[in-house]
Length: 455
Ligand SMILES: Cc1cc2nc3c(=O)[nH]c(=O)nc-3n(C[C@H](O)[C@H](O)[C@H](O)COP(=O)(O)OP(=O)(O)OC[C@H]3O[C@@H](n4cnc5c(N)ncnc54)[C@H](O)[C@@H]3O)c2cc1C
Image 1 (tube, helix red, strand yellow):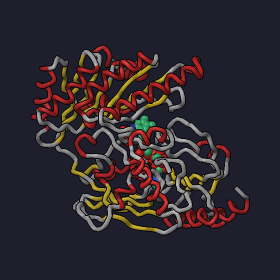
Image 2 (tube, protein in one colour):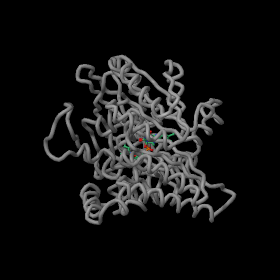
Image 3 (spheres, protein in one colour):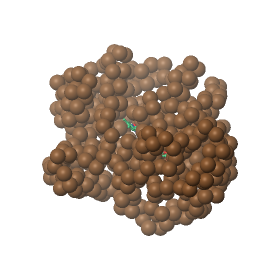
Image 4 (cartoon, rainbow, N blue to C red):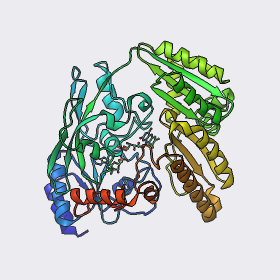
């Protein structure tokens, strides 16, 4: 980028623009595998809505690609830098603007960390329900842009179900407000829903009005250990048939338990070959937990009701079950979802697939939503041949999820990495319509190009 072009931005936003090489490297990728390595030309740390508007006017004037960024915890490459881009970091816009306890709403800036919002609203007896396992570092803006899921989604839904209104800066710097402060509202097309999950390709989210829920009065946590993974998956369906709606219903396979024991010194694997971690909440929590316990014991599980400290430890271990390694071309964490009725079939097929392609596999799942995170990996020392085996296994796992009526991504977004699978899921007319929507919002193609859709 020309020096004068950048200087123009530095004069408009003094102290916000960095070209420090360490910043460029740190901000140029998220946690997903990098397919097209690129280094941003600059990092802009926005401090105000007006600053974001000024930046987008500048980007439009000079046709500079802009990659919005929250915490960079995404795992699909949605926040990776692209050629000639600037990174627009929203992390310093982190004020909780208001909490309206009686309305059960809060208004926040996009850089607020998910956990911080939950801490703030807990004082009012409320919670912000969507809780991605990354909730301690991911931002509300990033959660909105990816329509993030999480553990409590089994009962309370995805981010989209908790977003009421947005302020968004469009590609040309125009500020718009979408949605409403009420839970209900059907005026016009639902632009709030469209923006939620658009991965920074339609605008920059600069303010979010969220719906809150009451903190449950009572919580019960069960750990159900099964001999093997498919049997634990069958437990998910049995819980549904007993007409109980847990708030958390997470499934971990034996290799995930091994990995957690290795890193955290726990003894999960000794207790069984697969774990179904279940939480019920609300005034009926004890009765619901008892119903679930009886159902799962009937399926042969060893079930224990956990005290609050052990329960927290187990949920926390689940949140770490992805592991701390950043994904790359030798290790890829997937995010398919299948209809719950096909969970057992899918889980069985996955294990056979890992064997067929000679790749390592561990699986954790938000099982209540049929959303699985199989991580496939190969030894780096095996080189390119192993990498192509890994790719074949990934392709096969995604294809099967689609054949079973599922999707290529349940909650992580398409980003850069999953674009190769999008046309497997969506018909040409739908892909074309999405490209035309993008064209309306972003005629110059400067908002996170090469991400989320096939344009
Ligand atoms: C250990 C681990 C566990 C995870 N667990 C879960 C989980 O349980 N559920 C889940 O859904 N995800 C999970 N994720 C993925 C990730 O945390 C989520 O996608 C999260 O929502 C990303 O938030 P972020 O602030 O880090 O956004 P980033 O990674 O910075 O950005 C993500 C996308 O949003 C865009 N974006 C960010 N901010 C804005 C904005 N203000 N306006 C417009 N676009 C914007 C970016 O351009 C990018 O496309 C996990 C990740 C890790 C590493």
